[in-house]
Image (cartoon, rainbow, N blue to C red; front, side):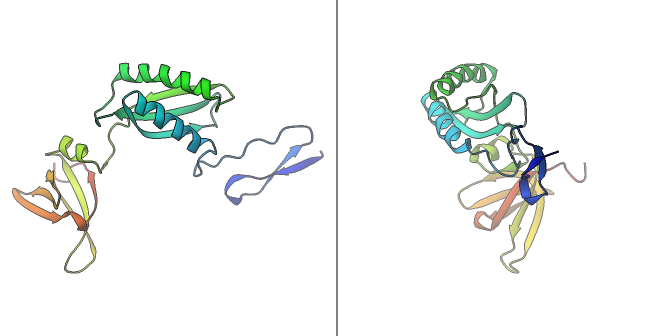
Length: 187
């Protein structure tokens, strides 16, 4: 069989592709698709015009047909509902067709980002008051990383407040590395 080398992602060995057959596209899940920045600009613009904010975008070319996943929130940071997703799907579908970025068949999936374990935005800290969290922070005395579990009370401009066994613990916000939801250790 006469063939030509076809590179694989991440420096793995190459395949031999028989002459006359197209070289399959190389896609590495760790690398974004080359169209992602253009799609992100288009979707961000369309979302803002429709009163939404883009939270994430992913082009999955390993699926047949390829899938464009878009996560969004309401412009004020609120969560979208099923009707919002359906409405935006039509608006975005029209914009994608008019722009012509995606020349192949595709599936468009619109959703809310949902909740993640890591709390980062003010709305997360308001929504999960009273929930068990683990706070990773840098200890001011030793400079070492430490963790503290407790119930989230609040986060203000300078401090993250936790309830640890009935006592309020205040961690300076600049020393906080991350705050994530957990399952209570002693339930």
